[in-house]
Length: 231
Image 1 (cartoon, rainbow, N blue to C red):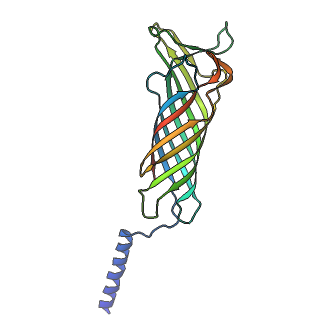
Image 2: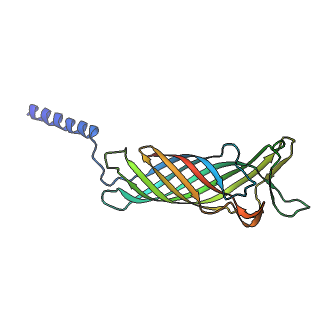
Image 3: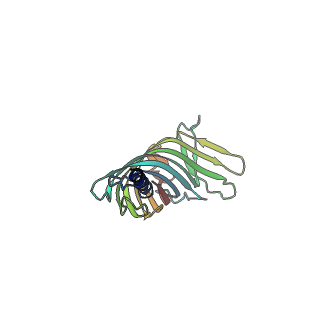
């Protein structure tokens, strides 16, 4: 009797230990993910007199809820919430409203000897929406992925700064014609953690009520970089 009791205890312990080493496969897994992105921002839709200067970059962080469509869970939808901080360095000077001109003025800084630094800083709350294809399995966390979709954003903070070498300085946070609602197409593809990322804005920073040098409105952006997904 003692032998049987001991044998049962050994078998039970062995099964428990085996379950710890080889956990049960979850066939209903989801690719719920935290994402972290680093991008280089390229400014487009601008007059020829305006040029990009220096490094313009972005930092993007958020979470995405995965909604699989098929039994293999290789195809699905991703819906998330994120935050994005971006800088844009260029030669456009945004001059705030004043008593003489009751509107925001946009001019190009053309004198290279006196031009200092002109920069936009933006903070956005974003809603990513993605169609997702991947080669993942319940037991494999390294796989190919292609995620394509849209990113809806609201620019809750905007700052335009300019300061030249002679001490002249302008700051503007609420310029005329600024479109705070942002819309862009996105594409992420790669293997495992490291993925290439592309964002193409579908609307410009400033609407057509704004005159920037010789064109109405403008200033869109393309973001190129890396996106890291963490399960």
